[in-house]
Image 1 (cartoon, rainbow, N blue to C red):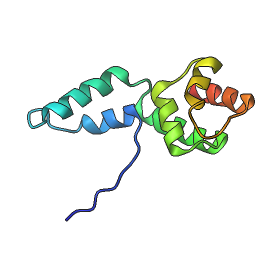
Image 2: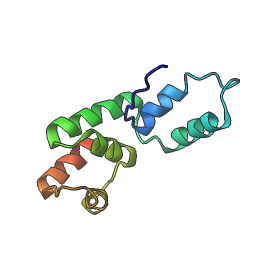
Image 3: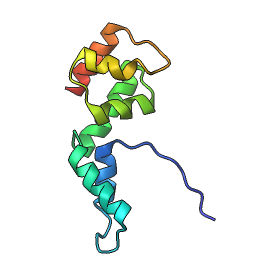
Length: 104
């Protein structure tokens, strides 16, 4: 039996992978997911990867946290705090400002 590994992807990265599927052979879930990722991608796939890495290395975010922020691309400190308030760590304002600078 083939072992499956789990990999976190941003919406743009998932869209890039789904574009490789033959639409003639795709099932409904694949087609709907492709449509969703097309509508909700907030950055090109290469940019999304770069942003994730920057957030992780420069701001100390986890892979999960960086993926969440790249998917949402918050535009203000208030919006960013809405997402980070649910995390198990409190980020200082200067880190939040650095996150916003990286994302925009």
